[in-house]
Length: 256
Image (cartoon, helix red, strand yellow):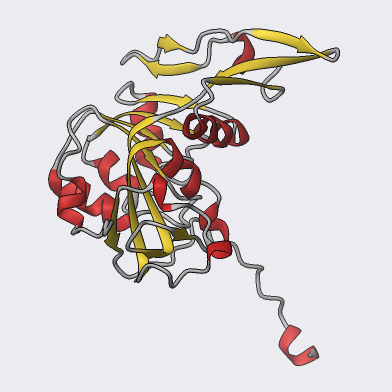
């Protein structure tokens, strides 16, 4: 089955209030072409599950700045000042989740596992509840996280975490064939395959699209059974979220 479509057609049926699992790790492997198409399409009230929310002028930050995102489930805020502003002012609901837990929640959702126990977060507010999910306009906590179920295995305490599934998944691959089999490059593999698994309808943008049979079976990171639509990705923009360089040492060049 040829799953290649245009970017506009790929996102045309994403409605207001949809839940999206969006791939990317920091600024690596962000499905920017699909995000741009979604920004053009205009759905609002989106509930997004992603490792982070891009930066102010790129990635999911574009949807956030336009007021299209109602809720984020993420591991960290990152360099996105608008994310922090909306969260602290009560405009955005945010569920902060340990990164490994978020990855496993997505994997479990894609594997048909409804919940699992993990030691991450034991003895913290992740266990006890009370983490602010949404603030009121006056700065008080309007909605807080609930306490989690705890069980003991082998003398150690574990928290029950529920799996994540999404109406749609948006991911970026280095290479995909027309059947949806995907290969990811380096750190882009961290969350993209997991998000793809968790989506009921999965959209993949690929930097290169090849014919069926061109990808060796052992090279496939994500089987096409998880993928519903494939589009050609726009040019990859390589951004650095925070560039840190060592200060120049006076006289160092002369010494070398």
